[in-house]
Image (cartoon, rainbow, N blue to C red; front, side, top):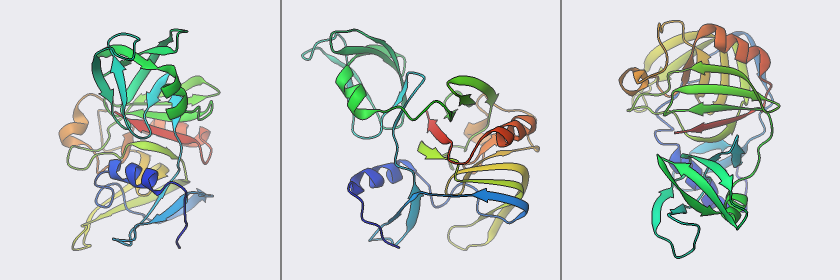
Amino acid sequence: MKLKIKNPRLVALLLVNSIFLTTTGCENGKSRERIETTAKLVEWENENTKQKESVKLKTQKVNHNICLKKGKVTIKEKPKKESRVLKKIKVYQKAKELKRMGNGWSLVKYDGVKGYIKTEKVKSQFENIGKTYIEIDISDQKMKYYKNNKKVLSTDVVTGKNSTPTVTGIFDVYQKAYDYTMRGYDPITKALTYESHSDYVLKFFETYYIHDATWRNEFGGDIYKENGSHGCVNTPYQKAKKLYQQVELHTPVIVHK
């Protein structure tokens, strides 16, 4: 299936940021009980590799946390066009809009640096994705679920290790699976490399899932760097159960560093 879209560069950019996409994450397994799905994603086919990927094309502003969708935005030392550049906000990295100055500039904080960007850039680069969403912060190893702008769940998680990182970007819950077996395969030999079962699984992009991980005794901190997942978001059992019970299909999922 080939669909023509107006901005193929945007799709390519998002896929570039989905590093190790074809070799990480959890492979599809077979649910013994229930799978819910009404996936409505954009299908894109790379003309060179003939590899298909699915992605929800959105951008967002989350509780004043900004994730840049494309390009770069420079942070200035002072709210003036000619002011010195302190830093550049990279794609899918977290920044926080602290205050709108009322003079066409916004005060933001990014990567420990405070400075100013043009408010029009905030408006042109980001849009509100709604009041209900899941936010996964890789740097803090935290996952939060907001419903009607109220935080109803917060938990430590373990994301992908350095060699198999969790994809970053703007996605949605395209499938829910209960009592599900996940399988991983070697990308070259196609041999089965692991098999893992979870009771509660939320699929948010291709083979990247949020799921319970009963084999872990600890979550959060720096565990993910050396002992992380294959790209999925490992979650404490009770938290994963609660999330599964409350989250509806196509709830936005924002993953950032």
